[in-house]
Amino acid sequence: MEKLVCSFSGGKTSAYMAIRLKQEVKDKEVVYIFANTGQENEETLKFVDAVDKAYSLGVVWVEAVVSPVLGEATGFRRVSYESACRDGSIFAEVCAKYGIPNSAFPHCTRELKLAPITAYLKHIGWGKGDYLTAIGIREDESRRAGKAGCVYPLIDWWPTDKQDINSFWEDQPFTLQLKAQVVALEQELVRVRSELVLAKAREWEFHRESGKAREMD
Image (cartoon, rainbow, N blue to C red; front, side, top):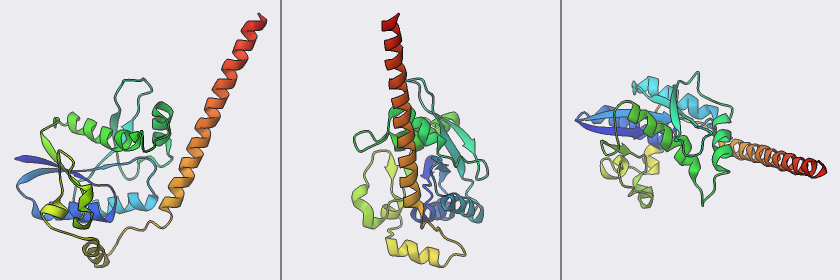
C-alpha cells in the first residue's frame, strides 16, 4: 500500500484536505501530522485538536528537539494538545543555534516543521522515498505547487478554491479564529530578537573585559 503523509499546518485549507483524505482515500496508508513550532496561536492548537477529534484523524503532534551541537540534526518529541509548547522556547533554541531566520536563511520551516516530521517518520520506519507528502495548496494557489516528493490533492484530485474552503467551514459547528495571530508572532519575534541581541552583547562584553584583565596581568 502506498504511503502518504498529510502535512496538517493548522489552517482551514490543510484541515479540509485532511478531512477529504480521511473520508475518500482508502488505497493509501496515511499519517496525519502536525508540527507545533511553539509559536502557534492558541486558536490554532484548539482548531487542530477539534478537527482531529471530530473526524478521528489520529493526528500525530510533534515538536522539534534542537541540539545545541553544530552538525547534529534536529530530532522530535511527541506531544499533545495539552502538553504542546506554548512559550516560544523551541523557536528561541533554533534562533540561538542558527540565527534569526530570513529570506536568505529560511531555517525556521526547515528546523521547526520539516526536521521533526522527517525524524518522526524515520522513527516509524518511513525513509526518504518511501512516501509522498500531501500539501494543502488550493487550485487558486497552484503557482506555489510543484515541489518534488509532494502531491497536491486540492489541485489534482479535488480542485478547490478559497471560496470552497470558506463555504465548507461556514457549514461546520466550529472553525478557525485567528484575529491576533500576526500581531502576536511579530511581537514574539521582536522579543526573541531583542533577547538574542542582548545575549550577544553580554557575550561580547564578557570577552572584552576578559581581554582587558589578561592585558593587566
